[in-house]
Image 1 (tube, rainbow, N blue to C red):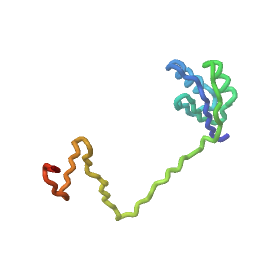
Image 2: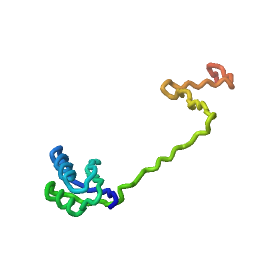
Image 3: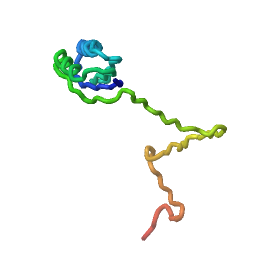
Image 4: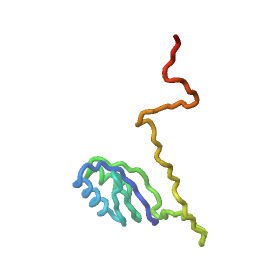
Length: 122
């Protein structure tokens, strides 16, 4: 048989339930590795009885929901961006100077008109 990856959602409230879930899953026939991913138990094995595993976890912990069963041979391909060799650019960050705005009183001087200081209308 081929490897299979089983994901079971559990209600893991404390450390005692986590250790009980790991121990229960690890003692099953055909299990190669058991990991916890948040509230999900990820089991990778060869010829593991998924229904028996889920019912056993339900009896031990009170709640177990089978999320997915799939092939365990998934190899994640990482795409690396290749840089052309010999070309490196030094990019300077664009920094704007600090703008002073209205913390100081705004003073407006109008020099276009030369009015006398006092107006004598009479």
